Length: 132
Image (tube, rainbow, N blue to C red; front, side, top):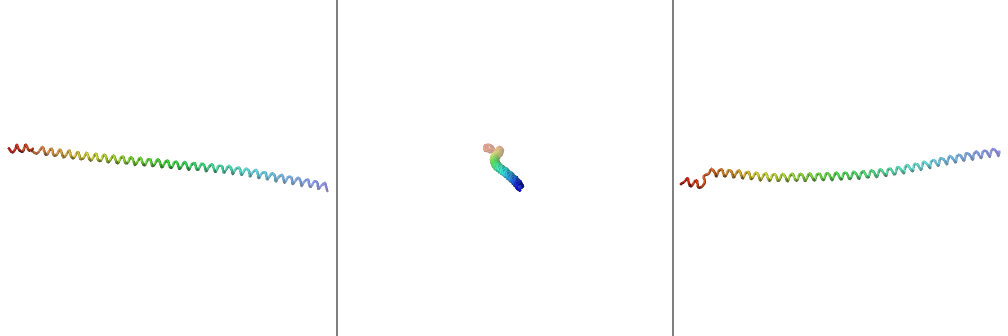
């Protein structure tokens, strides 16, 4: 029986050693997978941080672009207002000049009419000569 017992003990020891080795391999494999998962999560976190930074830059860029467009539109509005003001001032000046010319033409016409009437009227000397 000692011989069988020794074989049995050797076999059990070999089975235990194999089981322990399989357990150790499973633990090592689980630790390796865990490490890989941690590395993958770390990489994902870095990617998320990078994406957030890119989104922030895009938002800043869009804000800057919106501000630039607003400034450009304000500038254009100011130019249009200035242009309209100059146009209105020019029209006012032209109207004043036209009114002044109309007054001059009217005065000239009246002056011509007076001269025509005066030319048709006999002068004081002509009336005195006619009375003589």
